[in-house]
Length: 354
Image (cartoon, rainbow, N blue to C red; front, side, top):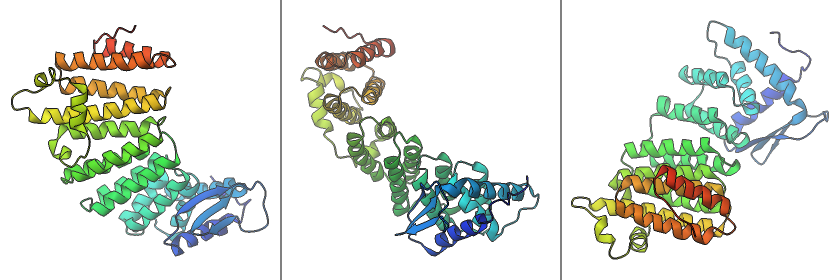
């Protein structure tokens, strides 16, 4: 494929972009500026540590860098040059969903032509334009797992969690961002940093309250909850009203049936799950007609039954869900009936509505 020579300004534009990235360590954002026509000036906009590119030239610039990069990629001998880096920078800013181009940057890191820390800064800038792009998150995780290998530092982990949260705030239902966060939570648990999961548990609770239609964060909380109930060392750092939830859920006759010999920690795990169940109930009552909340509730009920599969749990859970479904039936009939049907088919627990 021959390089398109119909747009001679392409080389100058991508060089200007690269120079800005190299010179400004505080660069924080990239975006396209809607401008359908050439204004006879540079289409590269740079203000207050933010970089922009006018939309009229994007197609021409991307065509130029794409063709040049494919030509370079087809060469059998790997060549590292400033031109390759400049081409990749503009190509990934405009379209970061091309895995081949990220692989070329990986090779440049391995060859010592790019620094890992600089690449973390660059990929964070790209995320501001495409906050849901899985390739960017994969690239960042690759840098940590294959190059840096310094995940024992709490500051590094907290920074990555902040990057993921920022991306999740910029794009709804951003499962890729929350998966990125959970990857670092898992690495922290491997390093026995159990306090981090408690911090994430509280942070995500606030986030869910502010984004009740977004199931991606609720899935993140589900994965955190599985970690909490699987290891009592995680529960030690948790601040919640688990004991109050237990007293609220079970009456005085049912509580003795809950405990068994050598199972002290089961009441804590159930208490944490119940605390989340009551939090979910508050959200459903306050923000009605949100399917994400009902889906999350079904997960919690399923987890409760699997943590402690006894008739006591099933009976109390049935009564509790009957109460909620009855109170919310008016105005939420579709969601309530779907919830009742799921209870009967998935958990074999019948709920009879009035």
